[in-house]
Amino acid sequence: MTGHGRSTRNVVLIEAMPETVYRAFLNPEVVAQWLAPGDMTAEVLAFEGREGGEVRMRLTYPAADEGAGKTSTGTDVYRARFVELVPNERVVQAIEFESEDPRFAGTMRMTATLAPTRQGTNLTLDFEDIPVGISLADNRRGTELSLQKLSGLISRTSC
Image (cartoon, rainbow, N blue to C red):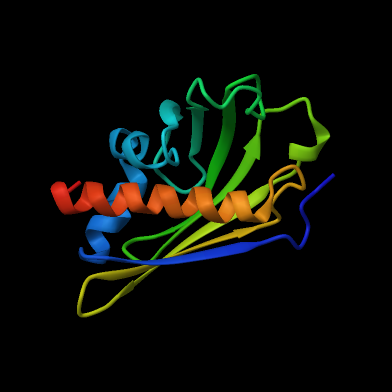
């Protein structure tokens, strides 16, 4: 099964220059701090921050979310490939979940578009071909929570 045609979009204003936001997508230590939504945690298993480079992450749900997880109970593991990197403008990844469940199969595409504004950067995250096992509302909400972490992290540091 694929998520062909299933997509979401989140837009947030981050009070930082596009260069700072772009770096937050390419620094594995920083990615581990903001990528996991809400109370989830992230562990970077592999990270090659270049076009064609691979990323492998483990996201762990809090103990209260019993039964959640695409890879195993309580965890999501995924691989991503950097399809396109346009410094300070765009990051495109092809993402695949490691799961035995066919509802999570297929390649999801994430495009981060950075647009400078007077106040900082408008960051748009588009997800395309979302696997059918992921509700669009959950994808949208999880992305919103991750972007809140990113915005907070950037306001406290310079990444």
